[in-house]
Image (cartoon, rainbow, N blue to C red; front, side):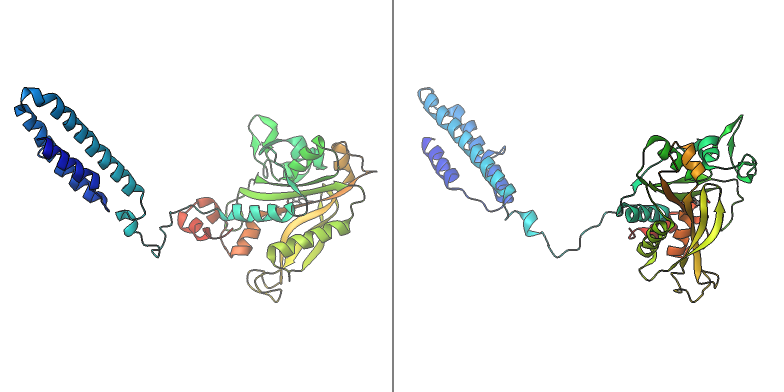
Length: 341
Ligand code: DAH
């Protein structure tokens, strides 16, 4: 018996394995139900009484050594670079890309606008979508009888005629000017609402980005240069701009800005309706009445403001011809923008 134990001890000490399966085989050979060590424990019953103490101690030592050795080898092999898993590893195999979502085209264009203005120091500010008359109209110099205040154009909140869904993001201008002192350089992206029939070119919900710059000695030329920089960053460095006189209650003088058509380069196509120009925003010098409403002294400060629709610009950039697609959330449409940033 002692001799058998000593032989097994030697076998265990010298055992080596290069694969986890070999360790498992060895475990079965030694310690499984019919394993050599298990059998020795059965034989132990017939050992003479005076030898039991010595043989018992040896047997226990054998069992402990065997399981320690097996554990040690198994641990070494499962961390080792020569394990089976590593042998099967193929570094040339293409990666499994997990499916990730895509940004909505309106968000893509909004983020581009934010990045362009961020580079020249404009910070983002936001305001509420449910707005009061003061911020949406009165502080912006809209006269009492202006048609935009009409139920036909604006969604009023029932029973509170003073509260409506904002019709433009110009309301955020007022909120920013009320709570901060010049110099102010901000853009305000957001959702706006108008009581319009839904069609391929109009919707009752859409998105705008408002811009505002207030400081000492700000001129119309500053505005023009900033908007030219924006147009070139957005539509390419060959882009031209054109300012046409216009009217808004909150700016004086006011203008509409067109950019040269980014599809035909100005020679005329169906996107620009053969004019070579695409209208992208309204702009102008902030009316002194607006500054006064916000407690900013128009004798000391001046500034410019502008407002653009994101949908129109997105339609131009990606040649989308129906505005309703932005609101349907059809994944076949949205997924096409997965690789665009
Ligand atoms: N709020 C105007 C609109 O919704 C857009 C606009 C025009 C904003 C001129 C301005 C601006 O800040 O100066 O049509």
